[in-house]
Image 1 (tube, rainbow, N blue to C red):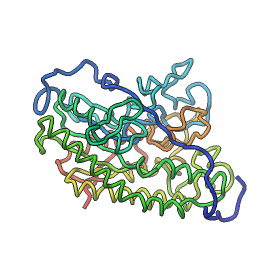
Image 2 (cartoon, helix red, strand yellow):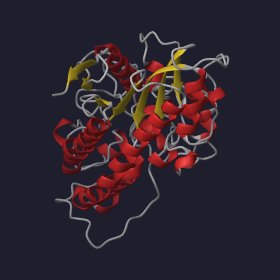
Image 3 (cartoon, helix red, strand yellow):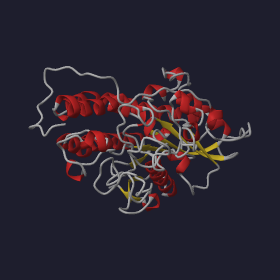
Length: 396
């Protein structure tokens, strides 16, 4: 990219290209890494305990294949590619049976990384690309997603087979069109030399009320499923969470705004003003509205807006993986860059918390579970440390 003048607005022009982030899904309970089937007589207060995750790619484990980002396109990519067998790439090593169908429920997904909780089963029902319509029960108009039954229907089976103690929910981003926003902003940088925030903010504002209503309905569905399974309202917890920002503020980007380095080296093709808008307006707006839903529905809230601070793609405080800089939770990026030509795996992994980010999310969930029920917290990382440095701060 040349050192162009100030980007123009996007008025009166169309949009090229397809989606940057896509997803397909299909799996069954037997693909969730639970091992042998639980006793049929289990249920509330009886049988093995469990924490369950529901929702979309930010909790399913999308991009868990990657320990940081490396420009090396061969072999194990300097140790960053967890799908490398030594002779070939096998994404099933990370995503199991969902590698082929696109749900991408990774072995390091948030719920799978929530260690130290004392529960006996960590059940991941989330699926990359899911919307609120894929969470609702089919009897309530919920939709199957790429061959999978709606998540609330599947939750009913888990609730009858385990003593479910908590349900973590991440949903709403796909309803809002977050993938389209990322695509538009990247295209505006690479192709149009223009900003995206000027036209995308009105789109967000026009959709967000309906999205939040749908998220609230998802919470209602979870409660209905649990009530039907015999759970008293205080016998389990619902933890609604927000989304982290995968890109840093413009001033925190280690690559120059002009030139091609943000595209070809960093994998973060965004203008400073658009980065600032995403980090300080879009992500907080979504988090604040989700917090309102949590308050209105009387459920817990886990704010992840700052979880990746300093660990984002292209962040000054982090580094790419190289032969001289091996993967490290203390120094590597915790989010997946935009790999728009699929050189190193499917494009749908782009802009998601990667392996280290998921370990961090799991620590956040474990800390929230350990806190007193009914809490509302934000979760942040400690600069220069690994994922064990995550900590909670109560929200006012």
